[in-house]
Image 1 (spheres, helix red, strand yellow):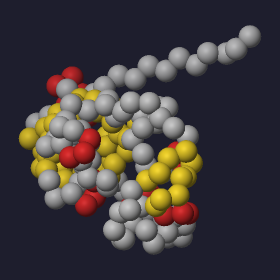
Image 2: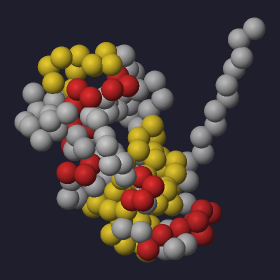
Image 3: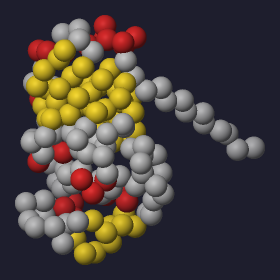
Length: 154
């Protein structure tokens, strides 16, 4: 008998960004200078207490306009196909996104951020503080992407 895993995700907010369509969003959010707003639903506002003390936060959201996926994909940085799980393609079996953004300001339940690549209307699933002492790694290998992110896209 096959064991079923039931997963229930509950959005805690919604993302308001200048990107209405996928082709408008940057390939990597950290390169964008545009500002987005993260609206945390009022029932979760208390959970934002003390967030102003962090310069950066990690935003986890649902890629609500993702359609289908392929396990082998071509990326903007290489003509060769690569395994989906070695890319940051938004088209995934479980379309979750995780992005580190700069926190610009908080106005009650609204966070103004820079560096977010989410499309307007993306459901917000979670927020975590970015803590350099915990999140940074000194020895990192970037696999097939090594040296390609600074180059022109293919």
